Image (tube, rainbow, N blue to C red; front, top):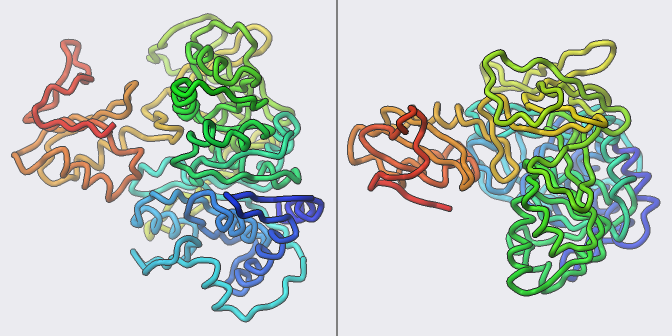
Amino acid sequence: MSRELVAAIRAGRGDAVIEGGRRTSYPQLLDDAGALAASLRRHGAGPGTVVPVQGTGTTETITQIVAVLLTGAAYAPVDSRTPDRTVAAFARLCGASVVLGARRDTAHGLRWTDSAEIVADASREPWTRRTVPGSTAYVIATSGTSGAPKGVVLPEPAVLAYLGWAMAEYGGGYGAPLFTSLGFDLTVTSLLGPLVSGRTVAVLDPVRWPLAVVTDPRPFDEAGFVKLTPSQLDIACRLMTETGTRSSVPVLVVGGEAMRGPALARWRDRFPAAAIVNEYGPSEAAVGCCRYTVPDGFTGADVPIGTPPPGVGLELAPLPADYAYPRDPGGEHGELVITGAQVAAGYLVPDALGRGVLTPFAVRAGQRRYPSGDHVSRGPGGLFTYHGRIGREVKVNGFRVNLAAIESRLADCPGVLAATVAAGPGGLTAHVAASGPAVTPRSVRRYLLEFFPVYAVPAEIAVGPEIAVTERGKLATALSSPHSEDRS
């Protein structure tokens, strides 16, 4: 990717990144990233290595990611809220001993450092504008909900294939605003997409970004596209409804969670000029491998995920014999199997020492194959529709969360006899059977935060002498325990 990235940056005109009143031109981005890349090379970065980058979408973080790619290394994006213990395990999995991010003390055998320290520690050498080809663009954690993290290895050709068709279909305007989590592969579209197409990344505050839609809508209205999750779009629409504002953004690319038909009316009311694109894709298939532009007047409950772009194949594998369909709207049903140009190389899984070992995906007829674990149907015109996860993995705010992994960790919590976790409209709910009064919702939450990011910690935790169940033997969604706490 380094060659393609350098070519795009060299050809870029105007601003590469805008953050508040700070503007970084394409030549400046190339100079800053090049200086850091030269220093990173002296620290061992290059093809076959991985450099974790932790933070939020800022000018410095973007420069760090570009610098890593210029060395031929892969970057490993890590959200700023990820616990140090989890970051250290992920870095060890990637074979890294240093994380680029906010400079702070060593923790869990790992050193955090910023760009200034890296450059200062190395003998400053001029960057020769020589690009180094690499084989991997980035390595991303699948969920962050396991004590032994697993990384998805995305080859450069897979990422470039995605960015190529996505920018051809979504690109326009100045580029795109960036406000989504660095550790979420949905962010690749808004971060790298504008840069490889010579456009601009407009950095917004990851918490206060909805206010920009009302107070300074230009980053949205003048963008070629805005990418976000359905939950984020709902947040923006609520604020816009309260203030009576509307946006003229031309394209909304919505992904990370299932899109539901009833939400379309309120989205269109606030974004009347926008084409709404439902983009589907697991981390194992380079961000997005299927898309559907929702037509005006669509009234269905489940919005199709559409059709694959060129170079991507979608197949249906049989569902488990005991699989319970949530609904059957017709069409041919099965587990979605993704093949072709965008499929990841495989997983980095930890060995006995926590070091990553690549487990490659299966190859058939020269094509990598990834069984997604998603239940889909294929209807008239070849349109695919998503119906949910086949197993116990769910999505919370766009992040994949394994309910079984949380339950397993809860079982190790001192004083906990048993626990179960479920996902509902309000988020995750945990019911905990405790041995005594020392176990409280607050103590359980503190324990889970040592291992999981905040989005994977249940919003509601009920503690009692036994786990509440319904008359049908299913987990009760209402929290009737006096020892319950709501974090939503």
